[in-house]
Image 1 (cartoon, each protein chain N blue to C red):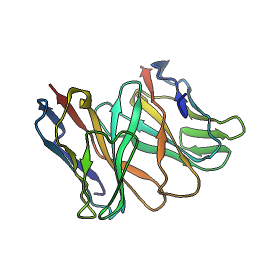
Image 2 (image 1 turned 90 degrees about the vertical axis):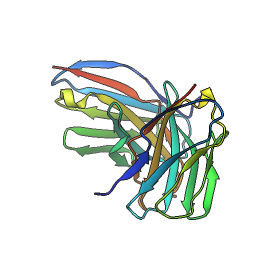
Image 3 (image 1 turned 30 degrees about the horizontal axis):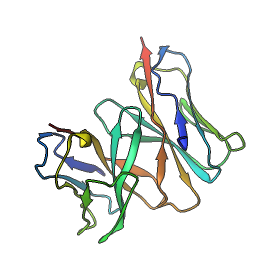
Image 4 (image 1 turned 120 degrees about the vertical axis):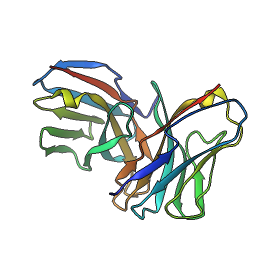
Length: 111
Length: 113
């Protein structure tokens, strides 16, 4: 089944404790991205990657890092999480037509 | 001012009614228009994808684009309780399929039996 997977689905952590949210897609898509979704603000892009080893900032990159060492994986790293990063996070990959496929989401709470 | 405006709702309708959703945008550079459906605790899934002005129909769903007014709509006919979800519009500029998607905030729809 073609899909985007994320782990973990739910995470509660404390301020300053480094964490990584993994993302993997099995559709051989070159383009992948991370979004956060907050009430009233909709989906905002954090980072995107157009191919292996090619990443760039989206609209809200502060406090986040990404890497793209393999085509299928695109982890999101929070080196020192803060409470304002409490949000619902989505990984997505896009095909050559521009159709975007989203993962199931990761709900992060930073205390 | 946001580039894409969408009423957050909630929009509550009885089963069988027509649901009408819309987004307005300010930049004429947007050329591709999409509607996503997002169920609670799930990721968004693509419903409709259109480029040109006019109507596009898929089953009970009709997407309408009016580029001159910078206004897009989604209509759901014969609505069902399973249509209860948040609907997000998404727009993309130019002809580059890698261009950034700009999302509306989403409209919550509740279809009551």
